[in-house]
Length: 273
Image (cartoon, rainbow, N blue to C red; front, side, top):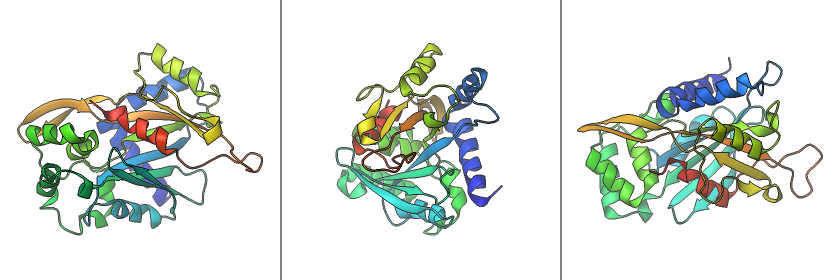
């Protein structure tokens, strides 16, 4: 197994055990319906990571570990209302998943949010993010229920990062590569039939063939999280499904590989309370 494959295996184990246990049920259902076969394994289109801006833990600190493995920055995205900024990265090997990394722009947040985040990361050494293992090892700080609830009042994203720390908030099934469903609607209907709740913000299917990408996602699993003064059951990870299309003057067989800001903006809401 290559270094890149090993990294994604760590992400998957953390994601499927800690953040989104229902992902294992989705894979099992797809396998039972023979949408996954030995000849057509599940292809992961991309994962997404979240962080706080700043010198210790900013987007670039996460990205450096992927760049060291050959990934290159491609798209740049601004989410003004949510105070988020993001890049996506691709590897020269097209079979490897893309990586979407976003950060909360703390300089645009309230003094209270900045105070709480500062308290959380204060004791982390400046070199904390130098080891790639931090990317999938969860929350490295103590957090009270009150701090979590105060962050959630201003930013669901801030509360999510504070509560869960580091790890993939979602993996993404490439519907283009499934052995059965060729479109998102039958995929979504199949999930609803099996009692999954879909993210309907902006429509269940976000995007269109015209912009090169359609996306849908489950709402996040609710998991019990231990805080320094108690436990809460809160949204964690979700599973996304994507279908890519050619746009413009692309060569035959070539598909759009970027992301659509308006759609991604609504996908973020899969983890809203």
